[in-house]
Amino acid sequence: MNGESLERLMEIILQMKINLTHINETLHQQTYEIRRELGSVFEEQKHALERCLDSIDHQLEKCCAHIEEYQRLYSNLSAMREKLIQLGGEPSGLPTGSAGPDLESVIAWRLKELKEHGRL
Image (tube, rainbow, N blue to C red; front, side, top):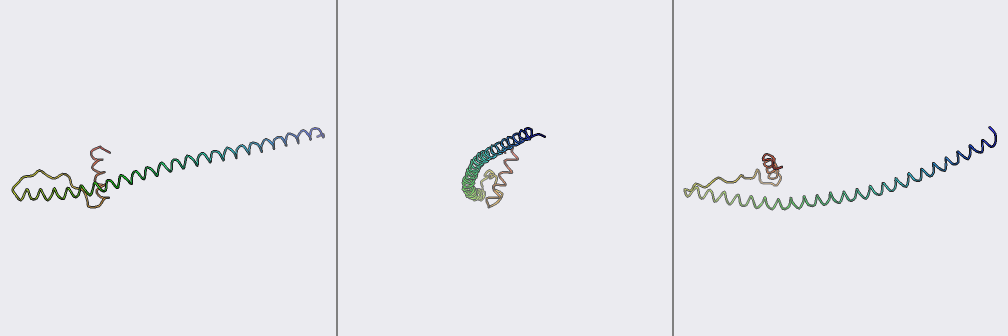
């Protein structure tokens, strides 16, 4: 191999090194930008999920209050029905009672009822 060929080969190798360095820098920059964008999207989705959970919590709190009211009304209606029977009346039947005294059992019971009636 003569000196000119060797010089030309060295120039090609140097140019390849420069090109690879540029490609590597571009890759790192694009990776950084994608990571930053993905992090931003992640944070947005995380906040949306937190808002959903807050809404679920709020609805469960409202549900708990409704369950307490339902149990109070059911108890009063049941007592009134018994008095009517004792006085010789023939009252209609009571609405369906809840499946238990605690929130979890009432919610499970209602979910089951709704599914059986095709509402969920």
